[in-house]
Image 1 (tube, helix red, strand yellow):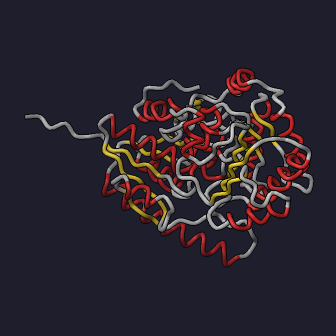
Image 2 (image 1 turned 90 degrees about the vertical axis):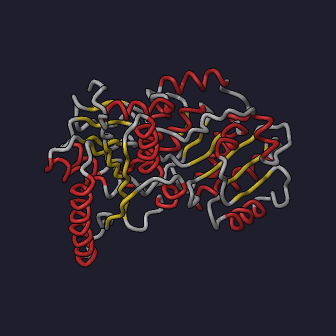
Image 3 (image 1 turned 135 degrees about the horizontal axis):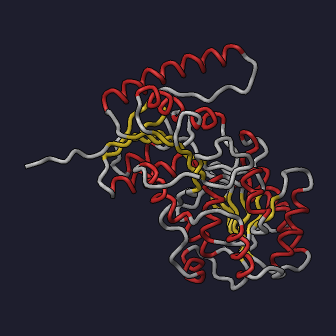
Length: 377
């Protein structure tokens, strides 16, 4: 009897959701196609529990972010971590002998792609943001194919980029009605719902600005409700911000630390207020809801600003800077959306113009690239 050896994929991913989830979705798709999959993450990575929960194999290597200061000690520590990561990655490649390597732009991606290139192993990377991170700029030069999650501001690899989109969790777009989602979230008022979130760690400036904006709108007679996901450990401070805005105890304001069922939030919401991480932008492209984006000012290379601009240029979302005028700007944009100046069909059409591929097909497109099935360009 002939034994067919499974093809092996090494997926270097982790860190933020925009870097981890594309790798996870690809791993699931490759496993479905009969591949053996091994993930590579940095030591102590936040993604490890998710891999454990799904029973997915992974290897950990030392890794650290490139310091953004001139402190020589920090650069020395980075160099030592990087060299240790190279050694660890070399051992993984030698022991596992993958047929292809995928890099999702995390700190472990560049060592994996670099050593795969030296060993002659096929490799691709995925850039989920609208600007290339430093690691992907270096790794992309070593890859015959580079996958894009969003239209990029400047394509450093013309002729070998492929627009695949960024995979999103399987529950998005939601398969539940707005009314049922609101019932499950404990929201029973039949008025427009503003849903806000700033990522797993929250966004303090956005939290306080939205509370102030909501207070001003309520005082002016606007009728709406708010579901505010403040981030772990930030709920109490956010509730205090609503109290200071005159909305303490308002039954139309619900503040949560964390929302595990984001499909319910998207289904229930009429308006989204959020940061502009790559995963959030991909999810918005899937749900096609009116959005106000407040990019994180400190995002590396200004990538959140560029991500938000992709949707803003098409008229699918509004991008607001995080500055002293944010509460007033938020209130003005929320008033415009609450007044129904843009219909659901117009919003959907704007998302279609943004040039973001349907996230539901992104994992399959990435798997096709790994199998050499996609054309480049």
